[in-house]
Image (tube, rainbow over all chains, first blue to last red; front, side, top):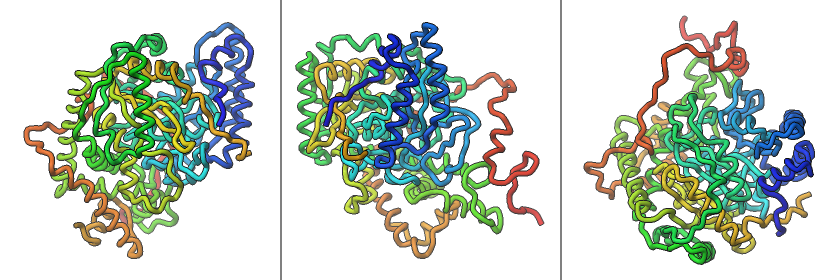
Length: 488
Length: 94
């Protein structure tokens, strides 16, 4: 274990004072990826030439006095974001050769802000998984222990930041896919409110919950990046037109007197005892910073998993119906007829977990099951969202664990499919209710990172980032890095 | 409890094939997932409006004007089979 050397904010400062160039940072990142990725499998596609060309441009802009905070900083994208002329696979055989003719709004905005894209990160196939094990390209590994999972679905992004490939990677979060891997890899990951960030060009999984966000070392870095990522987009009609504040400006506000709710259901039998202790200490730290800790209740927490696993697969079965072997994506060899083309292309192109979820989603949307499952789940979704809203009427922020445990071992045969779904038990609520939530490093248990989750009111990312930043000023968990000496 | 034949029927609707070898496992997993949903029936949802969108937002419309969003060549580059900008599929008419 070592102290992390750099944050995005520190690199930004160094670039602007000229003590380092974007080319040097980019070369350093690329060489680190080349050296460590064979052991970590966090990156599916590297873009050396494009990155170096972009770095040269950034250095010119810096030399001409451009002081944009993200200019010249190398980063990685989850391979769910379309990148023009760069392969975008969603970690699926279905899209293994897909070259998008356009970029996602998130990609465009960060490029416009001057960031250097180094490549595309591994993930669970179509973002369906909590361990990165469903990737067609093999699981990414946790840099803290390569026999363990990095979490998922944004596991490659989390592992890449933890291993120092870059100070930032983008992620997406439908049921916890930014926060759980951030927790398991010891980094900071923010899922913004639904509609805060455009979904244009982000390959769809469950459209009423999918949301993109930053994964970085610190809350301060997330604040800098979210300011550039967020905001209305004519290309995504579900993206909110609420104004985007400068999130960095409110980081230093005192949290004295702030009311922080701790739901008793987040400390249930699902939660590992040592993780519970670490989260308890983190909450105590917030109290010592002046926050008022309030016991609250979210009685339907466990129901969130059932609700989510009806709604997300249903939306996925509709979204993934577009993969038919006709316009793009995998096509089977020698189809006998059109039906055979559809069925074999999909059966050969999708992996087991994606097929499982399409099956369940197709079933719950069928006429005979619709009311019993899909309609019912949408009603329970409102019950859950109302519980969050009631609690957040009385407190400013909710605090608890991000994940029920630390990183588990790869290929854990004792974990059933539904055991794996329980990984999301504490994160799913924020997706169902459309609330912003962040995971911050909050300790180590047996040498493995633990994440504390903070959940806020809709579009109040500024408050979450403020609380997370104040916590990180008082603690040093976010500065710890895994020892990677044995991997080279 | 959903039986193997019913799971196969759902697979046909989803345009997925499940081999005879895999159907037993697929049915077990399908039922495990469905069992997870049983808890929903314990919630009284009379008078509860289903939540379709977390912001309860309605579809925003734009002015109906012609715009070019992406290039045709770029899109067609990804087609598994094409001819003169048409996607090719197996013959559907005799």
